[in-house]
Amino acid sequence: REMAGSNATTDEEAIDWACRTSERFLYLWNLFDNELEMWMQPFLDWDHGDARTVYANLPVMILHMIYYTYQPRWRNNRLASWLLSHLNATLYRIKERPDLVRVDARTCKHGNDVFIEHLNSVLSRSIPSNTKITPETIKTASCSVSARWRLADVMKRMLRRKRKPATPELLQDERRIRSPSFKDTLDAGKRFIWEKFEDELKKIADGCPTPCAAAKRNKAAIGLQWVRPFAEHYDVRLGRAKEPTTKTSEEVRAEELSVEAAVAKYKKEYTLKKVMGLSASAADAALKAMKVPGRGSKVKEGKRKGKNLNRDDKRALLAEFLGLAPAPAPAPA
Image (cartoon, rainbow, N blue to C red):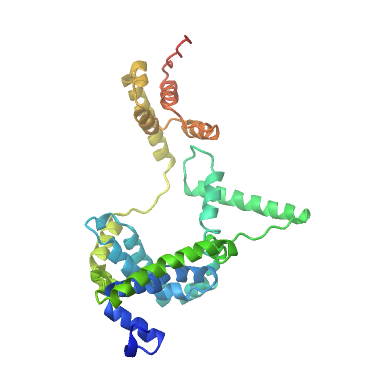
């Protein structure tokens, strides 16, 4: 306010004067006070049970994401296209099924990592290795995990054991940041941010503010201009997509026969000398191509012992699968 002089009588007017005077100050203020808050606060509100800020900021978030991802290889980026499809589905539900939107908003605390990532991790670990993933496999795993959890709850109540409910990761981070142990880190972060503003204020005082071309870019407006190519590309990808289907017993048998034919071909082509001459990466590629049974369990067993399958392990496993005698270990000198 002292630097602004008669141009500002309040803090808000002083900030406005600094933003008009220096492009870099404007860029820093928008970054720390607007953009970072837009990316973080709505999801924190969601975990606290308030879904309104997510819905209110979703279109602007998508436009910013398009602004940042519209690069020479933008067609390889799937996130912006997925966000556009998510926005389209959200608008459809608001118009056609407001009841679903109300349910989603009232139960938004269930849409966090405890009920999504954690549950998916438990389900994936409950499925044995080398098991083909099908809708029936996932359904069976889900039912078995739910039954085990209910049984565990009953046993805990019988034993009078209490356990605190799981807390979403975002709320854990918020609680950790506000704890006294995090004070030094917060102070260091505040000093780092404030030094950026102080440096620019000194340059303003010297009459040479730093130019910054990105400061006056309206990222949302630029993203809106680039929505059309993303939407058209999404339509093309959607047209190529296929509905997921469950394989019939005939298709499964045909796949097994093709694998058996491939193995028979490999047995003719591979000799023990060729197998033992493969590099680690080539042997691993061959194991994957032939879908060697037991490979996943052996890899996990090796990791439990603190090591991965090395080149000789992969060669021996491949030779055993192809019916070749593994090379004898050299006699100790």
